[in-house]
Length: 469
Image (cartoon, rainbow, N blue to C red):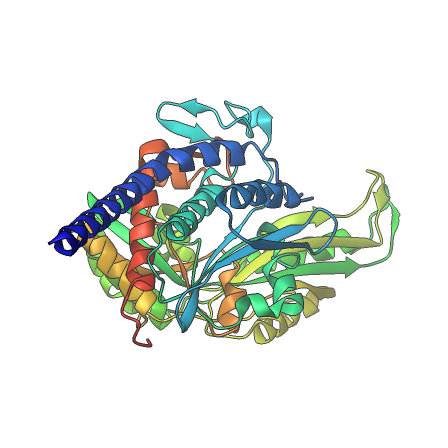
């Protein structure tokens, strides 16, 4: 009888322990929202403008949090001040999942902001600060998920890797690119990766979640013209400057012909279900629509982003020539930011530009050119994103996205890692326009909600059956 009572007592204690463990997990996951807001506020105050970067400041920030949580981590500088940090939660034998973020931000001129860019001021339900959306907000989102998984004693079916890197805003050569060359073990056995590139938006009163699968390939070029120098009072028939101007004018007046690749067609087809009815037919039949000159012109005027998905593009962004007004210089140069659709190689595009510039005596130098790669919608991570968002927001739509910008995902796609750009935060179009602009900000309530939504997506991957997938 005593043994029976003792067993009942032991079971009672066991149930109490389990109950409090569950309560603690629930509390921890709810409290993580408030913790995340505190982390974000602190993080936005850290100046990691690139150049020069100073991303080691962000490494110190993350390291202090990992120390408090008892999480082992490693870090390394690719150059003085260019810090990278990573940590790993051990799980089962299934291929690992990586949460990738960059810690650098673009410059912010305080003269054009209504608040100090690194003050992390709360105003009107927002936190203002450079990097709030690109991508320190997403970075804290990933941190919250990583710490939540670590605090929860439930066994994971795979390793989860947290990686925060330098230099994405300047090409990633001191960040992911450098780590792949010098610390390849970080990426071993990683099959899935979540990065920046997509989010939730309200389009024509429809909630649409866009998941980035591929991106236009950046090809940054320098055009150089050389001619006889002289005095500004005695102009010759041609000069380095006039050659350059003529070449740039030709480039501007002869845009590359539009063409639609399959991933772009899929994106426009998805968008056709949510935009205004008068535009839907053109989007649904985008292959035919691009043949209409009026459509292309209106598309560029209405949405430069959508227009850029229909063709290769070049933006003239930097110019240089004489350092004195009355001197005709021997050399003039321009830098152009070209983005090509990922169905062609950068080498063939560069050759095309070289042929275009030959008549003007302009040579072409390559500053940077990436390779093209895409991820599939037929994967467990994409399915987890799609299913989780549909469960959380039954009236929402999830569509694949092609982006005109670039992220570090191009490095990891080259490794064969299925890489997706997505943060479940819902961001108004007006706030998306602040990225790289003035008064960048993030809505506090939307940020808090995204913490739970992001965690739900990752749980759907890491708590699946231990059967290999």
